[in-house]
Structures are given as structure tokens and as C-alpha cells.
Amino acid sequence: MTNTPATTDPKRKLLQGLIGEAEKALALSIYFGIWFCSLTFLGVTSLHERPISLTIFGLALIKAGLSAKFMLIGQAIFPIKVNKTYGILKSLFVESFIYLAIVLSLNYLEAGIDGAIHGKNFLASMAAFGQADPLHVIAMALVYWLIVWPYLIFTAMQMMMGKENVLSLFFGSRISESK
Image (cartoon, rainbow, N blue to C red; front, side, top):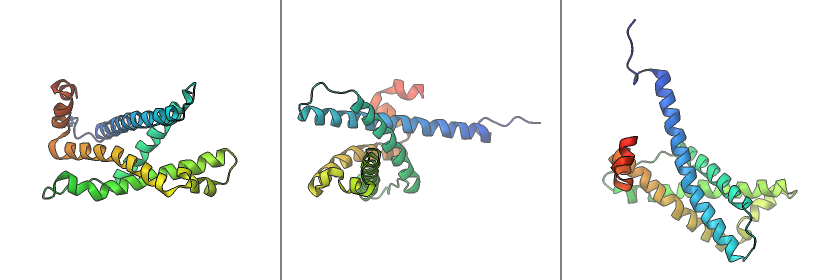
């Protein structure tokens, strides 16, 4: 019986794939978490609420984790494709709105679930998302797009230049060497 190299062992490949996906999910959750906690902090301080409850940051982190999950599902359904002729920005511009729609859908769903938990009608709660103000929803969509857009560019750069090269470019050679 011959030993197969570790790279061709199906179990090892599966494990490496799962670890890779978990790393992507964790990194994206942290990225979204920083954004959502920052926006939550801005919102609370704008309302001059004191003391600031730490619970809202936990909810922001849960939302970040869910958003990361839905974003990765969106990527599985609509894989990022970069056309070298157009470059990263032109290639991803339209796709970025698909991912924005995924994030907005999640927020509408979250509003409906939150309403149902608090004894309100699910659909009415969804309709009340963004204070039922279309301009407010558009403003939030713009902020969400500004969150998603850099992530998509970073991901496309990794696809085009290689993960190690991009990590080295952004974080120095020590990070890429440890991977």
C-alpha cells in the first residue's frame, strides 16, 4: 500500500477547506463587527443615551456574524468574477449591488424577526425597517455599500494577486510567512 501525499488525501483536503472557510467567516465577522459596533456607538452617542449599554454591541456582533454568513452564502451563489480587461473596480461594481441587496435583505428580515419577538406583526415590522423612511433606507444602503465594497475589492485582489501577496502588501511579510 502506498502513501498518498497529504494534498491528495480527500479527508485532509476537506479539513483544509473547512478551516479556510472558517477563517474567511471569522475575518469577515471581525470586519463587519468593527463597522457595526462603530455605527452602533455613533448612533447611541448621537442620541445622547447614558449609560451606554454593552448589550447593543453584542447584538451588533451577532448581526456582523450573520451578515458574514449571508455574505459568504451570497459569494457561493454569485461567485466574485474579475475580468482582467476591465480590472477589479469595473468588474465588481454591479456585483457589489447584489451583495448590498443580500445585506439589506438580512436587515429587513432582522427587523421582522425582532418585531415578532416583541409581539408585533412580522410583515409590519419589516415594513417599518429604516423608520419606514425610504431616504433613511437609501442612506443606510449607501453606508452598507461602503462597508461591502472594500471587502469585495480586497477579496478580488487576493484572487488576482494571490492571498500571500495581498496579505504581505497590507500587513507586511511576517503575516504572509506565518500562513
